[in-house]
Length: 86
Image (cartoon, rainbow, N blue to C red; front, side, top):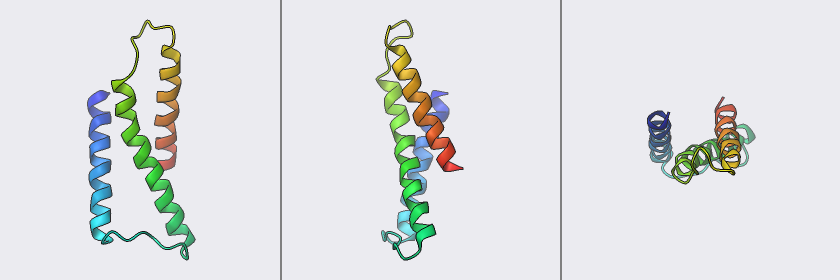
């Protein structure tokens, strides 16, 4: 799970950089609403994908009394990224 998630985050960042290179660093204009919305959702997915491994680094022990907070946060961020990516 950790290896796949780290790989997904790295590949997502590489894809983002490639998109920026292809578009020459220009953001999509607001006149084309569909492309603009697509770019905003893309930034959210990239952010969630990058946040996930950092959440895993700072997670508490499995027996900790507050582990449920990590579990809910991890599931929420992961499912949000997955749903938005579709």
